[in-house]
Length: 210
Image (cartoon, rainbow, N blue to C red; front, side, top):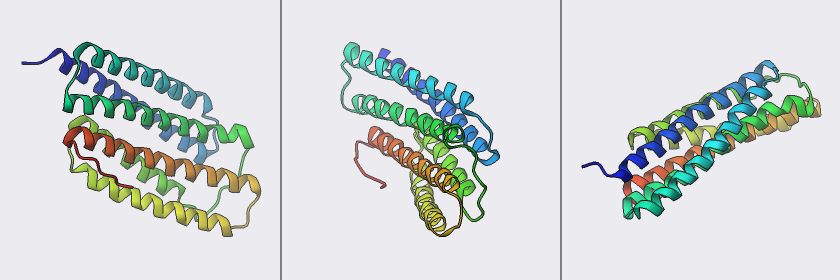
C-alpha cells in the first residue's frame, strides 16, 4: 500500500529532476555563449533564478514531509539526500551564470588553441546526465561511470591550467579561460556530491568518490 509519504517523496524527486533538466540547459547555453562569444546572460540568469526558487521549494517540501510523517531510517536518508542535491543543482545554475557573465564582466577575449574547454564541457554534461539518471532510476551502475568521467575532467583541468600557464595571450583571454575551466571543474565536483548523496540514500553506506 502506498503511503502519503511515498507520494511526497515522488513529488520531491520529480522537482529535483526538473531542476536537473534546467541546470543542463543553463550549463549548455553558457558554454555555447563562451564558445561563440555571445551574450547569453539573460537566458542563463532566468534558469539560474528558477533553480534558486525550486531549491527553496524542495527545502519546504522536505521540512513539511518530516514534520507531517516523521519518516524513519531510509526515508529520512532520502529526504536528507534530496536537500543536499537541491543545493548542488542550484550551484550548477550559479556556475553557469558565472560563465555567462564573463563577457559582460571582462569583455571579449581571444580564442585559444589547445585548451580542452570543449572536451571538459562534454565530459561534465555526461556526468550530469549520469547523476540525474541515478537520481531518477536508482541505477547504481552509473556510479562507476561518474567516477571515471570525474577523473578525466580533473585530468583535463590540470592540462588546461598547464597550457594557460605557458601560452602567450592577453590577461583578459587568460582570465576568461581559467575561470571557465575552474567553473566546469566545480560543476563536476557537485555531480560527484549528488552521486554520493544518492548512494547513501539508496544503500545507507557512506563513501566518497573524491
